[in-house]
Image (cartoon, rainbow, N blue to C red):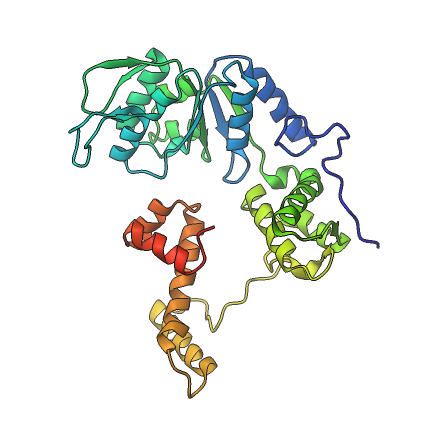
Length: 352
């Protein structure tokens, strides 16, 4: 079977909406809803797993709307603590809290005549949800620490990787806010629900990373393409994007071959050094140190860097991945200062 260069998206006229890839039935429905809702000022709720492209749809709704020339402001609601998020959204006045040394404009005010995109809105607290409901209904709010009411003309697009109806029924999300957000819902299908779009996505990412890395890998081996289409993609399009970048960087020739794909895609369990299922952390640490010393050799020096620094790098990398690369969340989970985390990311080459 000969190698192939996949088509861009199976559509000679290009993607239906610039920046969005895929021509399958599931995505066609997304495109249709995106165009329809863009013409209105209605609130939009985007639902879908992490990595399905909710922010791309939010940007498309904004760009195709009458507000397209206005600001598009994104807020990751899951990245900040409640008090910081409230200040981020609504602003604050000088002296409102410790560290508020000056007045600050919030994101809703900054998005006046435009769109504010509230990502991970399911992570907001009940107290903040009350204030969000007021903005949606009355188009007004007060800055933190202020009594002056500010009116805004801002459209709200919200996104969640959880079913907000189920969250509301379970009492974890305000029901009235859910119904106010749920004027139009756009469901973003997972990659495993739109496998027919994988060749187009692969082609798209190949072009991007070939250009960025000054490489020439335009072809995909049929066996590699089949493996990509068979994989279950828990990380969706974002995971596919990362794997294609990796393959472009490592490819020795002009073809993406099977051996350039991660073991998970090939249906193999990732190799674990000296790991015994069910072993406690102390046992695993002992085995790791023992193997690190053996690998370094009897006359090796600087064993601390050889063993501990590698473990620290891997720990930071995995926690960052689990926190969607949001540094403040990763720092909290690691229990270290955010500046310390930033320094270590730079030190270990993990900033990207």
